Length: 430
Image 1 (tube, helix red, strand yellow):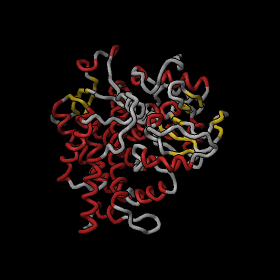
Image 2 (cartoon, rainbow, N blue to C red; image 1 turned 120 degrees about the vertical axis):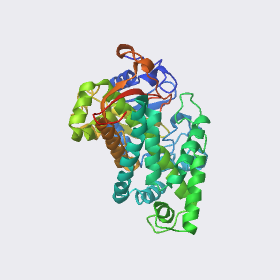
Image 3 (tube, rainbow, N blue to C red; image 1 turned 30 degrees about the vertical axis):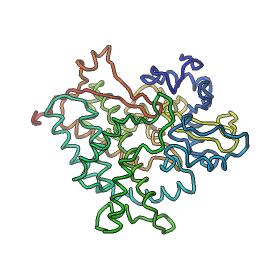
Image 4 (cartoon, rainbow, N blue to C red; image 1 turned 180 degrees about the vertical axis):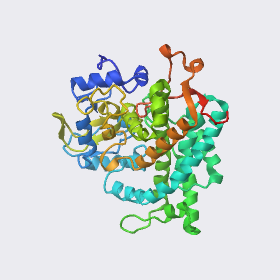
């Protein structure tokens, strides 16, 4: 049992490494419970989380990525703070990004996005996914060992989303370098330092997509970027350039970050379980459910935030207007009321896909089909081209005393490094 009265989920570093005992302690007390340090109502129950995620009329997403560190002034005592939210929305971090929008603005912008991420475009993108996976694996397997995240997962996810959005291959290296600059400047979504997020952490992406969109509107061609530039809102109006570039930037940044975390968690599980590894090699049709169980077991997003606009009741607990809610995905996905033996990884779990790692409701992840494809292709090609994958003892220590570092944030769940060793498959050059 973790002492939830003294532990601070948002700043305590030991809860970064392993938050699950804390989640269990919260849920056992009550699946909707206020934590004592930042006055946040933590929703750790599966059904309760779905109730909040599915109710955009009662809950605003204006603080979805910042939670108690948004810089929002104290909410007035009122039974409806909708006007207060709209008054202060322009000053909130990332207010121009899709995850923080509420209907009807969110409806219009998501409608624009869904006209770009179509089944046809995803199918076209899959051929590129296979090519880039093999190209990156050529280098990874030639070395025989290395950090899987920097050597494969990160460039793989970045290049896949760049191709989906139509970024010319001649610009791919510029994106890699530009995004590295952002990391070096210290941008960290949901940092455990507990500071308010800067208003616009995506300047590089804004600049690049703004240039693309303006150019394609002036000089249309038969490519994806032209489709992006000329796509209209559901009512037929052409969006301002700023609206389109923000959507593209959001898809680009969110799409790659969560996929990297999914892939790294999946490979750690594979490398730690030789029998599972053998099963997935011989029965690749089981990889999709393995991916769903990985998403449930190690949700890339720890949680999502909402702000109650009006009074309501969740899980038998009264919630007043102005209450900050944290939907703790990682806890809800291990709720024993929904998933039997939730702390066990079960490749054959029949309801694994009911997880909420991709959210639920109007803000459910639009890139979920792409992430699933990236996971399936990336994992299957690596297994096909290796006979064994091991965690490096010289980097992470022996099996009974392995050390892993995790992202120091209260938003993302992911490894900082995963150094692996690879034995090539028969016929695979080393």
